[in-house]
Length: 496
Image (tube, rainbow, N blue to C red):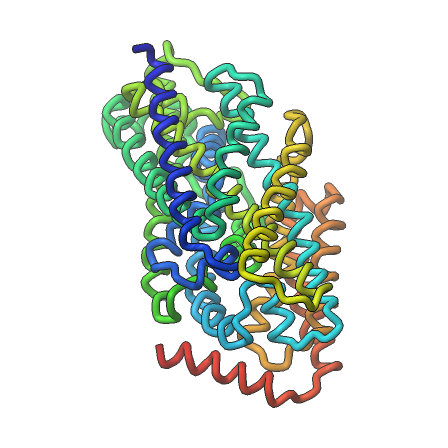
């Protein structure tokens, strides 16, 4: 049996497992609420690992190791910022969002929560939030398909379009049937797979570079600054890179996991599990990049596939050091990172179409069966558009990933925080802040002199936060019902 045959067998097992989980989850979906939020039934483990897997994408196994291989630990500030941001998100957002979304008319999506929390009778906020979600996530999802196509093209020599369609097809199959639960449970399994890969491979690689001491000595010989967090960067550069952590408060595909927890009290356990997973995987990814420097220096006969960005360092090490069947599961871990994010984005887009936009324009109550099929049609529509956008591997869609992260963080993040912690936020404050934050990200991100100085999420977040407060103070009118809900949500968190 050839090496490639072993790898294909491992990938086939992985694909079949994902499809089986999606089909199982289909039996748990009885209505649209189940399809888009899983009936608020996620255990802490499932919520934590699915949020982590949905968050990280291929950046964790390809982008981060490659960045450290090229530059060194100075590139680690993004990982530090993201870890701090994720912990803070679980700590201050998760419990209150779980409590408040249930108390505020059992809100099942972020746009519906904003609508219900602020009593936005104009429906402008709900529609605007839904449209921003659809636009950003359609491009975001297409970038995942592009990554899948490039993966199969570079690893197995398949035509790009075949690889892209394979990734899209398998992900679509388990998502369209399984919905939110299908995405969450497959994400949990994918999270375990990513964790195992990022622990096993760096440890294996250490044996080939003389252990920790040999690795450190060789790394310093190749690049004396590789193990420094500060060399080659500036204070402003550190702040800009670490500011990625601000984005967590506004990422719909992550914070919906908070809303889907079984109870408010589960948030603490989920936080411990989720951050433990994140710390271990980030350390593993950083280690793979740094140990890769030592490995390829000590083994000049081995070659790095991606010599420009070194994003293949993790995959190259797996193919060189592990049995092809095991390396096949390492390849599956990379696909898991891509597919877990893609499936979560498709579900959120589906809910934006089926629940948020349809619900805003139609007063007709759908039956359970109609709601389920509307959700599934939403997944298919978004996947089709994303696939069309991804059909060109040379498209600039991948550049929008960091832009989309900044867009969501700056548009939704301040509104989420203010909704949960400030009674006086008004619908007009949120609308003005949302628009201003989004426009700031768009303008700042497209002016190179500004973008190169500071990541656009920082000015966008600040502008949104300030304007939301100022406009709310001007338009605020006491509302006994809103204040009673707010107090009830706070009380539910304090007495968990």
